[in-house]
Length: 111
Image (cartoon, rainbow, N blue to C red; front, side, top):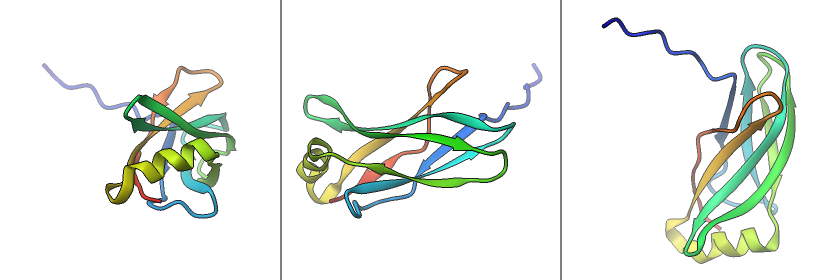
């Protein structure tokens, strides 16, 4: 059977930070078809499930990637510190205004 061409995701988000700097992590957001608005949510795996590290609203024009800072609260900083040298595994969630959430590219973050 012939394969259908892959449809690119309308919003792409990628975690840029591997270390916490200034109580924040950086996320790069790119929109493909048009102006995109929504919320980026960062979560980390924890011994008790997942911990919400922080979120930031975004508004990005087509073809103009933006780097956003996601502020981290005390609970988020503690969760990352508890992970130690190996780092906390952070996932990126994209919540769009006209679409269900999708996942972005996460990674490990160290204190």
